[in-house]
Image (cartoon, rainbow, N blue to C red; front, side, top):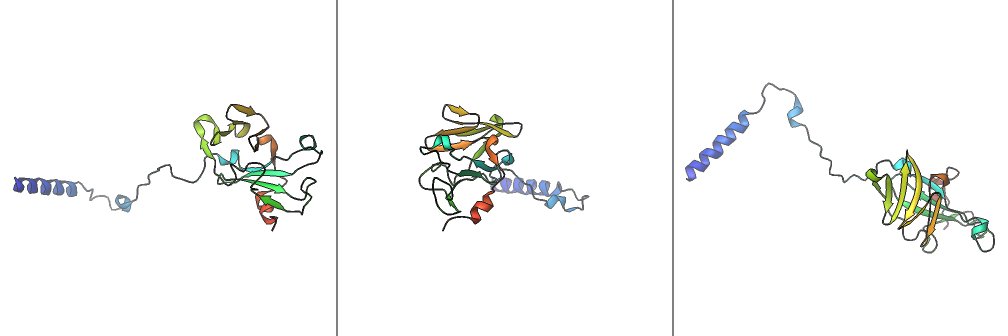
Length: 179
């Protein structure tokens, strides 16, 4: 029986070696096969949501009718950061930003990365969703609540494309971080 098994293994080996196409002189036989395991850090359609959003508190939203300048940034890698400008009338500080305050807005999502669900046209982070259509964020929702422009709930303050600002960039705010 052992001789028979060895014979079968040798026969299969000879057959497999004989199947090689000797007429093909190119290096294609040695080319690597790329397999997409879905582990890429790149988020599809990130340009739909990437940018700096103005989530400032206006005069009618504060107790003393002042303005609190706050920006939410979603970078090209999908990470969320909140920047609170200290030189506004609420903070009365220097012309600098505090990044990801331990108190205030978005503390539960700062520094986290969003995910993309292309089949449902949305970006998500836990219960928080940014819904899009034709490349533009159309609404934000949290749990069962949804808003067309700005959503403020449970310490979150999130905006849609209508609040996307180009007046300030994340790199500019990073250069002006408070010491």
